Length: 424
Ligand code: DI6
Ligand code: FE
Image (cartoon, rainbow, N blue to C red; front, side, top):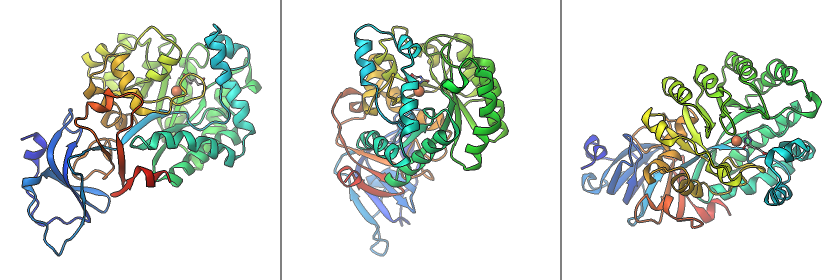
């Protein structure tokens, strides 16, 4: 009998509007997979009402007659969470990929005016509708794999109207596809041409003008920045995060991707929800993350695509009990990735995650990276009935396969959506 089963009293009269039966459930609760086999789960008004074994479930009184979903032995997990994407942008950079495969470096291409700036030019020119149409393809690719929450950053506008346009499109994607979209303002992604050589002035404009405008329209749930030699310094991030906190916004930080500039310590100082990439983070930085409760978001797609060799120190994150999340980092330059399931496999094969850690990385730890662990990320009484249904024999299959999608459907606000219906 797992802890979960011990926790639940028997369900005599299920006050629920839908009831899942004959399911195997990976609840992701209590710091592990939280498996309950041959289980039942009751949902009422979009919330989880009860979870337990089938034998604990008394006959459902006729007068209740909730909608019954027979899982027929298939597996339920929390809906998957992609906690780090740049999936709203126009155009693509396949040409730069070809150049990189012929020996040009990512930094060389950026210095020659390509890279992020290439996506900025295309995104600035695109209408809101064109941006929506090009971005929804990438979102649909994630949704068919049981993703029910996606974080989407701005950062390819780098001027007021275009940044607002990106965040509005992100919010609209959430409404159009009934997926929980968490938006992040990443105006500090790169220095735009209008501020070439004037990074401090750009940061001042972000703090005094752009971020307040984003906050006024309630377009961002958090603020992010790219702390790297080719982007912004720890001091500039410090200034940006001070202004973000003044506006009541959470913070997260791209740090340690190509070098250790001490950005992680700045993130920890502000109790950032997460720090992201982290191939070059120091032990001092990890200790600061542990003290601050900052989640390590690891991005194997960018590591793989850039053919990096220095891996993030997974064993150190374990030693300091820093929660580790995995995400696609879906972006046109370093991680043109459309599969979160592939990130589970890469987290294991490239970074040394266990299969359990990989699934925690896209459920409960990804929820923590978004500050949503009180609502989603594990299947527990009182949390959202936000689930994915899988044709698998064990949760470890989700990290095992590559290029194979066993997702049958998802449950959002308690309503089941067959994948085919969801993406019709
Ligand atoms: N780190 C990355 O890998 C992406 N942004 C960032 O901060 C790169 C984004 C791009 O190349 O378009
Ligand atoms: Fe990123």
